[in-house]
Image (cartoon, rainbow, N blue to C red; front, side, top):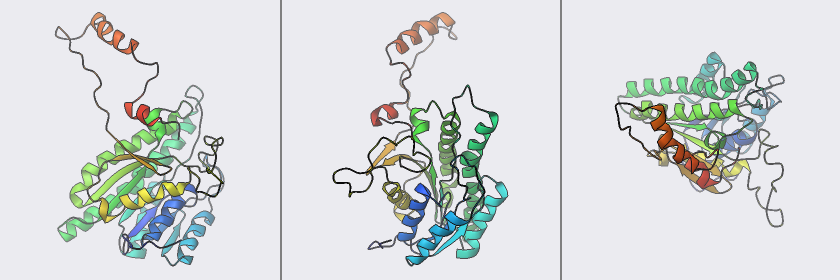
Length: 319
């Protein structure tokens, strides 16, 4: 883990959830490389669907890798979808490093199925880990920063980076639970950004595209590197981690409530949805016939299944 010329996160502490593998691992290593002390959280289950026994192995391995490179790291194996354990995760960072400065929410699972076949448990499990997991850690981190700010009588330093997905932006037919959870995370992020801004805390969300065990089937047909094969995989998680490091840094104090798509050396800032067309009733309220007269022609001229303009511009696919 080579050190950069400057260490913008020196003296800061961070939590990265789901950091035992894939994106979370790359993000934890990047924050440590930039100088942060990192709590590496991972529940350690073997299956990407959340199956298998919990294990300390993945979190311990990443924490050991950080320490071997000269950084500071603590492994934590709590389940972020459990409210109490999420609180203990935040408490562990404060106890170990004196305070918490950065929270990166990344933990998640998949239970893919078409909406007409999905079981209630498959819906609940994905919403619990992704959306509730993001809320749980955010809730305790936010309380920590608010209390610190009140004691200090001024804003403090705090950064939240949440993980959404292009499945929310462009749709994903076989992932109604995942797409809904990732859309909810964007709503949670913007609400949190508004609530915590006065305390000096920013909250942003990223939509990463990366080859991990969560997406191994999605990107199975895409080459891992161009040219002679010695280059970095275009879908490597290491392409995503630098943006997380930047958003976690003091330099990003002016970036708040934003959604950014990132992959393969590309970062795109996504605008909030804008009104594409507006129709006014000619009487007190619309009638069925009047709505058909204005909306029928409008949608007849648009491609079937067209989604947000942002998805069209970026050429987004499931991720």
